Length: 491
Image (cartoon, rainbow, N blue to C red; front, side, top):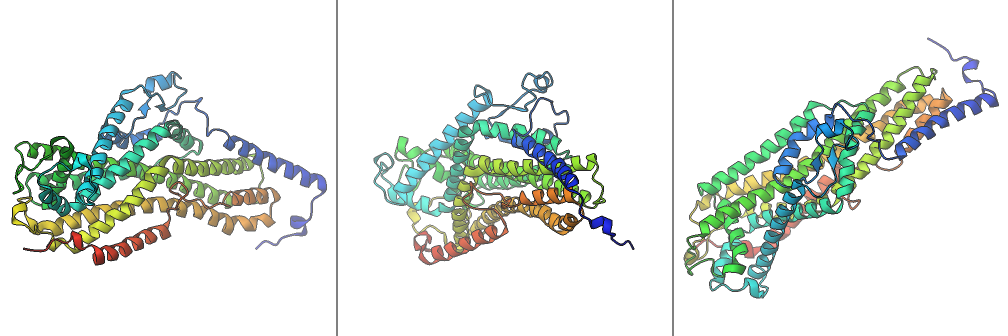
């Protein structure tokens, strides 16, 4: 057992204090100056390409869907310093941007016709372009019986369109954000775990499995909602051009309607995957942030466990790097919020509506049957509504929890760093003056809450998840009490 001697706590002379203070603040100011610049420069090409290797499967999926217009710079050009080592280019004159524009326009057109058709058929708006059918009553019943898949597709299209606008408007910011990640990982000396790549693969495979079930049910006409959702999209998109989609008041279709319904089913599947792919991209960035915060916390804990009296230049350099890296991480969190602000706002606004309707549909799944023999809208199994309701609800709730919790975990991991400094760093403030300055400076960087937000309109943490689920349950009860129009009486 050692005892503290008087020499350990004696006040050193003024010159020594000035020397220590000058030395410490010199390191802090250098770290702050370095971190306040553009993080960091790309003068040196990152050979490892860790972020790109982990992201490559997700990037390929996004490019196939037309959701990722940012063009990767070929490795040969990066090695030759033709692009300053940047992984992505901000040029608009590329095939990826052209494909992005085409898919965006198609999505916008479908969204417009679905919105106007909804206002005409369900809300009773007198729109001449959409009010030219002789069989309005039968079309209205067809629409009402498939309201839930309509809401799902409409919300996915809304989410995708907002993402498209955000990507185009903030394209330079997003390119800089994507380019910074590779060098940020290198600066922090982090080796990314293969589990992040596996997470992306599993998440996409799971959702592709759900879409495969939807296509299977549509092809073999097993569930009414799988067929009816595609038919509603075809109906709303064709009405302004053809008028009478149904060729009689018996609900019979034109001979070409099944083909158009198949195309509409493809649009249904595409809109759902395009929307969810953007969420997977956001979840991936949150995974990266959580992982880098975790590694930073480990470095802090390791450094605090060292001998507090050893203040060699190498140890001071480690403290300087810790301070610099934490500032980089905080800036990366803020930039992530800016990049995904519009996408998250559109998603959570539409997701509440989605889950409310799906809960209502699940509660009334046994009562959604046609009230008129003349309007036999579909020839499929009407007793399988409960299966469709459960599938839709599980898919939406799981995506909601997945995206929300992975964002909330970023705050949890960042808060652990503050807890480490408070538990292990504060006691050192009484033993070493230079470390006192560094610990206090690091703790000051936690003065603002480190949390993922939706454009600063809401914070995505654990209480937020409970709040949203509570709001969904509240609205569900209201719809259940006053939503009699959605309830189709059994003949």
